[in-house]
Amino acid sequence: MKKERIDKILGHMGIGSRKEIKEFAKKGLIKINGAVIKSSDFKVDPESDIIEYMNSVIEYREFIYIMMNKPQGLISSTDDPRESLVIDLLDDYYKNFKPFPIGRLDKDTEGLLLISNDGKLAHDLLSPKKKVGKTYYVQVMGYVEEEHVEKFKEGILLDDGYKTLPANLEVLVSDNISKVNLTIMEGKYHQVKRMFGALGMRVTYLKRISMGELLLDLTLEPGEYRELREEEISLLKRI
Ligand code: URA
Image (cartoon, rainbow, N blue to C red; front, top):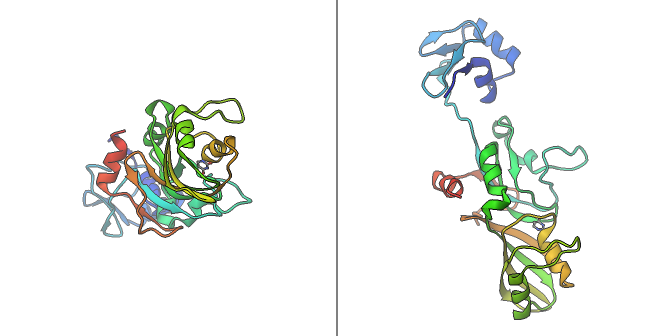
């Protein structure tokens, strides 16, 4: 990794502002490879140099990868002064990495939301070319039957004239309120609701349960989150 200023690195790790880190350096609280450095513009390679603050080694990391079970009522954008944001649920430690949701969910949608500061992964997961499948558990008013499965397979003409890519509909329960799993390869605005809307059916509950091969951890209650495991990160990076 290329060398970076120590104040930038320690700032990224949540140790303090640039100004504060300058003071910490002056006070001799920062060591690089065992030697005190007095200047906060000193350059280090965070992967090979040993960085200490107040005699504790700082484990540097560039990226964070979080899986959240998004609750209803919060929005996925990173800045909206009038609304409560999913990002606000994160500990300050994570907020410091300036993470953002990868692929939005509506305010009233629950389920799997990836939150990271890895721009390349976000780009790959969201790129229409990559056709990453996203599966939603849906409750919808009306009987969902074989004819609907066929229509979803052909692609659905939305209200704006766009015809969706083929989608896979699995009927779990066909009833007054049907329960289905729907897998789509794109992420158009309100796509699942609009696909059912085009067939005259209203979605009453929507929850994302997977993205690519990554499954929502069912032990996470709405509003809870955890870091992805190494093997889960690899699943996503293989996309
Ligand atoms: N489709 C929707 O309609 N809403 C979501 O939140 C996600 C997919």
